[in-house]
Length: 496
Image 1 (cartoon, rainbow, N blue to C red):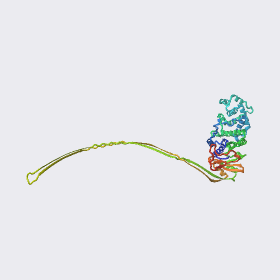
Image 2: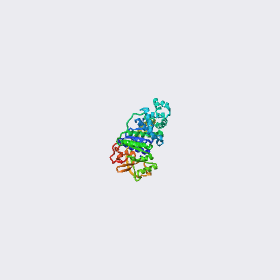
Image 3: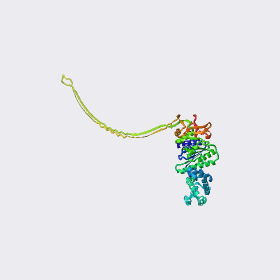
Image 4: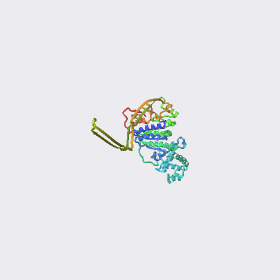
């Protein structure tokens, strides 16, 4: 795989490694980019219930054990090749891996079978006469008998050469001093990620990246052949390694039947010579450099045309439920008093008198006389009094509750034509970050496929993986181990 951005690599690694994990395979990732490309993969693996083993170097060197199980001669060979790979073309004539391996193997014999990297680096420091024996003893790294053996280990004529080369080896291998010094209890895992972090120095990280690759190659050389792609190794940032290191890694992986994915951010001349070598598919992602994009277009073939389509999958969910409750209580009192008094008095008196008599003188008849007298008195007294007194008091309290919960879901999918892609320099420089052009040998000859490495495709209801031929032999991926089977509608098939 050549080109791409860190974000695109993260998507592609999640897709590839996720499919291999779902098929029951074991995946080992070496991330030399210092960009934490495997972060999304670790999140997906945790969701599937896989507990990965993760090392971020140099911080986790004490609990990292890659290469420590090798024999003395094999470990010396690994360390010598590591120094040569870290030096690269600047090593000059003094960098002879065979002579360095012999020097390191002799030191391991002097130090004993339980010698670790820390003691080996201390022995190199003693041979180079940097620090002196007192420093080695005070640090508790080397014993007194070991220091005595080191003083007489090299001959008098070769002493000067040994001092110079021991100093050069110590300067490189000091980055591995803490390797395996505090190993925890081993636990198995189908996903292992070893990455170079930003906390190390530039020279130290180059040595760590070379050691990871060389030690992995040595272990693959000693491993028996197994089923194809049962073991999958992903080396990201492989353009930082020399050509001979990559060749040995590819040969060891092919002999062991392991799947190997090499990721190159750039395409320098050594990488361009090795793209597509052997039974390998070549994948190209976005290439920002014009020269590299032109070289990739020539290798793919400018006669190919593709249609870039946009797949939109929208899943929305909202819940609405309204509940209201209100309560109010009021309490009040009121008093009124009224008083009225009334008095009345009445008095009356009446008197009458009458008299009648016969008259003696005629011609007059009888005569009568009447007199009357009436006396009346009245008195009235009225007293009225009204008193009104009112007391009013009221208290009110209450509560109001409102809750909104509802449900509304939507699923929309649309497939629309976006634009036509022609394999040329300009188009390869502006590919989407997750787009990938894959070139491989198929049953009908050479095949060129434009694919999308977005891992979100695996979550679509009908997504599945169609057969990809012998180069990608292995169980087909249908869904994560704990996921339900695909839905009833016809599946959407994608080729990777």
